[in-house]
Length: 147
Image 1 (spheres, rainbow, N blue to C red):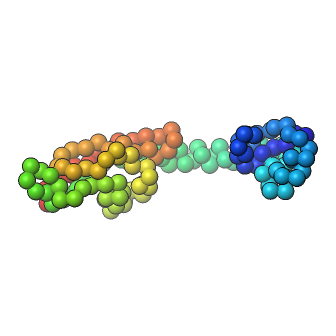
Image 2: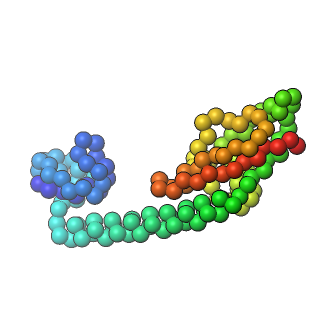
Image 3: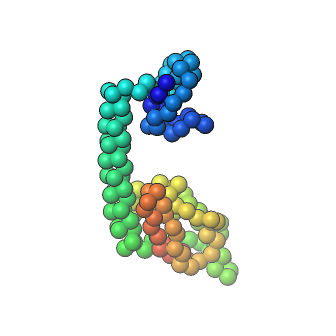
């Protein structure tokens, strides 16, 4: 029996894939759990419509991320912090601190999009990579200065 997967199924396929399985597996497991639907013309047409709407939505999100990248390119974020001898910080600057500083500047960036290997522990100028979308990456210039 040929079916269309509605969700990813281990060792079988990804959502939207048309696969051939045993009748019992389809009728007793996949279809009752809403993991799949039988392959019919109407189900195939619905699948195509869902793919189109998902692609349009992804393109819209990507366009918004591109605009955000352009706005971030002109931004130089300055963060005043307390520091001790040899320009070492009391504490450190981590992903949450940068996300909060960006929010204060009016940029809505998820903290999971900020890619830092380790926290910043000294004064200086840093370029922090951001992954706004799977296809859109940006760099943020951060100035850590004495308070």
